[in-house]
Length: 254
Image 1 (cartoon, rainbow, N blue to C red):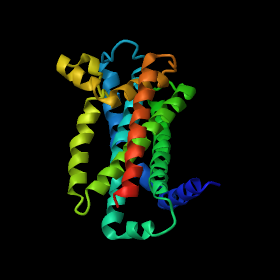
Image 2 (spheres, rainbow, N blue to C red; image 1 turned 90 degrees about the vertical axis):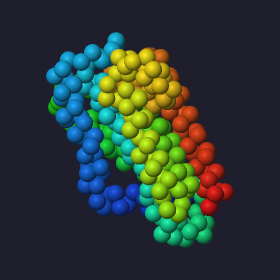
Image 3 (spheres, helix red, strand yellow; image 1 turned 45 degrees about the vertical axis):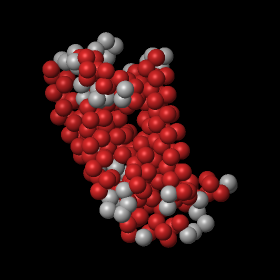
Image 4 (cartoon, rainbow, N blue to C red; image 1 turned 45 degrees about the horizontal axis):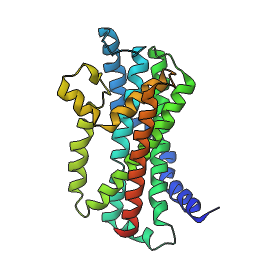
């Protein structure tokens, strides 16, 4: 096994072990998305809201948005664990081991995406009794797409954690300032097509908007929709930038 893969597996095992020993933490982390799914989603169904052309079933429109919301909130906060290790000295001990610095990022992002994948499956399973019609192949394709985006967002969060040493204030300021504007401007909760012109234009420069549209098309089983291509490109760009800069920061910034 190549050294990079072996080291990544070692880091992944170290990171995922606490989650496996206490799996309830994975469910507890879903508290806010579950509230949005059950309360907001049910109200959205009751209002018979206009979700735009081709929106299809309300739950097939809303559930992908909730999963993307988890992809934003979880991975963008992932740097918190690294920040604690940077300030506590654990990371320094890691850096004197033969473990590849690149694998320190890859192993952590693999753990973040694995956790997210489990949470996405749980959210989808909960949505089915609420009335969502599951297109299994499309749902799995959407989760694969969101996994790519989550890798990039986790990596960007680690860059921010490294740049926020030693106090960590910058990390919390930036994440708190970014998460909700990005979430609201991506059409996760309501269609941006119905927003005022200036708001729609702001949503168009938000790459998460394209990922949300692609996830909805895939959940509906519409693989040939052009939004799938746009979303795949946006997710790939986010992952490439995140992994590129984070591995560079690990090699040269510590």
